[in-house]
Length: 164
Image (cartoon, one colour):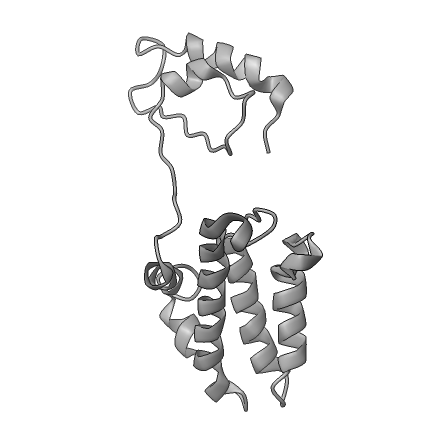
């Protein structure tokens, strides 16, 4: 979320930072989505890093299984209650779904009519809800899980009826 009106001030502040005036351990970390109003001077004088989603379903799924909260052993192995046997198969299905949704972007209009920005936060909230639902209810709440994950967490971004 870029404060475009503040960008000229940021540029001036960055121009005034010199090795003589800044502490030797000083570092300025900025994160931003691509924007035409981001100061070019700040970009030119900085080190740029990007995060690209993994290529392919396998790499995407491996990335998901090694990310928070799934990579935490207590979270991964700690599901209890009558639905505990459903945890790992449903988790695998959710991670696979997330990977497929992200891979569909590569196919342009054949994948989605509109380019949606599904990201790791969609998976994170869905995984946490899955665990919560499995531990809270005595019967497997598949309809509630489908609605929360498909219609709210992921489907909330989808605006084109053909993409539903």
